Length: 100
Ligand SMILES: [Zn+2]
Ligand SMILES: [Zn+2]
Image (cartoon, rainbow, N blue to C red):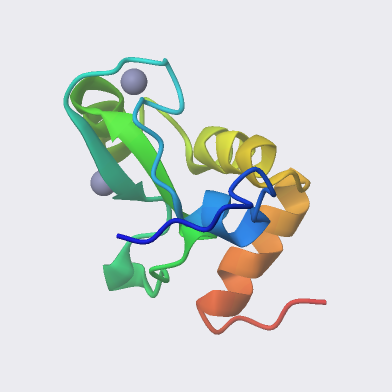
């Protein structure tokens, strides 16, 4: 694999595509898996703004309602450097809803 010499220049898009090696909610570093905040079944997109890395424990909570979508979107907002509303809007738009 060829790495550019000017590797220090940070590519934001690249960072966004990079998966975190830890749970974005509790920081756990083992058994990490990606979770769709808005499930693919409900129209959620395969986009970084709809994906969060969770440990098994948080993942189970996210599916059982122990962790809300808003909590996940908040963690994504911090990671992407945008507001929670923006995360919500982008996700809604990706799902085909009208957003203003
Ligand atoms: Zn966790
Ligand atoms: Zn999941």
